Amino acid sequence: MSTTSSSAILNVEHVGMKFGGLTAIADLHFDVHEGEILSLIGPNGAGKTTAFNIMTGFLKPTQGRVLFRGRDLSQTRPNEIARLGLARTFQRTSVFADDSVRDNVLIGLHRFGDDTRATALLDRLFPTPAARRAENAVRERAEAIIDMVGLSARAGDKAGSLSYGEQRLVGFALALAVEPKMLLLDEPVSGMNASETQGFVRLIRKVRDEGVTILLVEHDMPMVMEVSDRIVCLNYGRLIAEGPPEAIRTDPKVIEAYLGKSAAKLEQREVAHA
Amino acid sequence: MTRFIAPLFLVVFALLPLGLTDPYLLNALIITGILTICAMSLNLLLGFTGQLSLGHVAFFGIGAYVSALTALGFDVSLPFGLRVTHEGGSPLLGFVLAIVLTGLCGYLIGRLSFRVRGAYFVIVTISFAEVVRLVALNWVELTQGPLALTAIPNMVLPVPSIGDVALRSKMQNYYLVLAVGVASYLLIARLVASRFGRAMRGLKENESLALSLGINATRTLTVAATVSAAMAGAAGSLYAHYIRIIDPDVFLFSYTVTMVIMVVSGGKGTLAGPLVGGIIFGLLPVALRPVMAPEAQWIVYGAILIAILFLMPRGIVPALEGLGERIAARRKAGDKPTDAMPAKMGANP
Image (cartoon, rainbow over all chains, first blue to last red; front, side):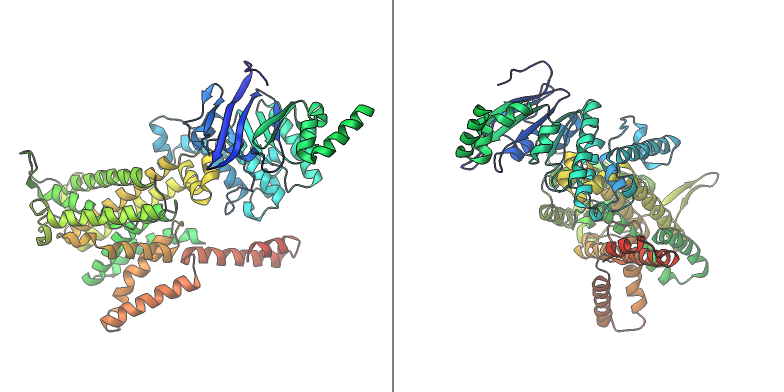
C-alpha cells in the first residue's frame, strides 16, 4: 500500500460502496500522484466505474472518503468537483448529440474567462466591446481544443452524426474544456480502431505533458500497459495489486483475476522456467 | 431563413397601425401582443431549459395586481394589528415593481422546485398559480375579490420636454406593447447566445454530462425562472393598465394553456417560435369570428392546432428551418455532385 506522499493529487481513503446488500466496493485505498498516468483495471464488475462515480461526486460512498488536492469531496456536488479541476469522461458515449462539435466544446467552455465583476452581467445582455472580446476568446479556445483532439474537419457537424470513436474524442474535448488539473477517463478507447487508439495514446501523453494528471479505466490491456506509469488492479471491490506495468503483467493475483486460478499457476510455472 | 422572421414581424407590426383604424382589430392585436410576450417568457423555461411551468399565468396575474395596486393604492390590515396603507402612485412605478416582485416569485419557485425536476416542477407551478388565484379571490380587502379592481389608470410615460404622458389611446398602448415585446425578444436572444444560454442548453440535452462540466443546474435554472417570471409580470402590468379592470380571472388556467399552445406550435426552443405561434393563435379567434358560429370556432381552432402538431411535431419554425436546410443541401448537391451528397442525405432522415 502506498503512503500518502506529498505529491498526491487524489487520495482514495478506504472507500466502500454498498448498494443495498450488494458490495460494489469493499475497501479501496490508493493515491494518485501529481502528473502521472494511473490506470485502474480489473475484470467486469470489479467496481471500477463505481469508484469513478464516487470520485466525481455522482455517488456518495457508504464508507471512507476521497480527497482531491487535500479537500474532502464527500459533501461536494459533481458540478463543484468539476470546478475544482477534476473532470471526467463517461463510459457510454456522452455528447450533446444535437449540437455541432464546436457548440459542444463551447458548452464545455461555459466558464472560460469567467469574471465576477458586476459589469459581467451587462456584458451578457448588451453587445459591448468587452463582451465581443470575451466571445472571440472563447471561440478561439474552442477551436484550439478541437484542433488538439484532431476534429477540426468535423467541427461544424452534429456530434450525434460522428462515428463512435470520434464521439469519444468529443467527450474528451469536453473534459479538456473544463481546464482540469486531473482527468478521469472511463474506457476512452472502447469503440476505437487500432490507429484511433494509437492517436488517442499520443493525445493522453500530450495532455499529461501539459501538467494534467490522468486516471484511466480501460479494458484494452496493450493500451493500458503502453500508456500507464502505474496500474492499480481491482477485483470484487478490493485492490489486489498495485505497481508499474511490468510488475502487474506478471502478478499472479492479477492473472488469476483475469484468467482463473489454473491459468495463474500455469503462468507462474512458465515464469519460473524462464 | 428563420432568422428573418423576427425583423420581418417587427417591420410589419410597426407599420400595421398606420393602415389600420378598426379599434376592434387594434384591441385584438394588443391582447395578442401581451400574450405573445408571455409565450416568449414561457419559452425561455420550456424551450431552452425543458422545464414546463403550467402555472405561468400566476406571474402574469401577480404582475397585473402588483402594478394595479401600486397605481390605485390600498389600505389593508394585517395580523398583529399591523396596517399597511399606500396612497397610490405612478403606473410606471407599478410596472417596475411588477417586474421586481414577479422576478422574486420566480426565484423562490425556482429554488423550491428545481430540486424536484420534471413532473414535480409542473405540479408545484400549477399549485402556486391556484393558491395565488384563491388569495386574489378571497383577500377582498386588498384585491376587491370577485368585484375586481376597477378604474386602473393608464400607463404613464415621462417624455422629455413634454412631461408625463398618459397612454390613453389604443394606438399608444399598441406601440408600448410592441416596445416591451422587442425588448423581451432581444433580452432572450442575448441570454440564449451567452455562456449562460450554453449552460441551459447543456442541461436540457444531457444533465449528467453538463454537471460533469461544472454547470450549476440549480443556479442556471433558477436564473431562467426568475427572468421568465419577471417578463410575464411585465406583460401582466401592461395588461392591467390597458384593460383598466382586473379580477381573479387573470389567473385562469386557460391562459397558461394558450401560452403553451403558442410556444409548442411555433416551435419551443427557438427564438421566433413563440412569435409565430403567438400571432397565429392570438389572431385565429379574431379571424374565425366573422365567418362561423362561436361553437364551430373552437372546433376549427383545435383542428388547426392538431394539424400543425401532426404535420410539424417540433413546431412551425423548426419545420421551416428543416425545409431551408433541405433546399440548401439540394442546391449544393446540384452544383457539385461530389461525396458531400451522401453524407447530407444521411443526416436528413
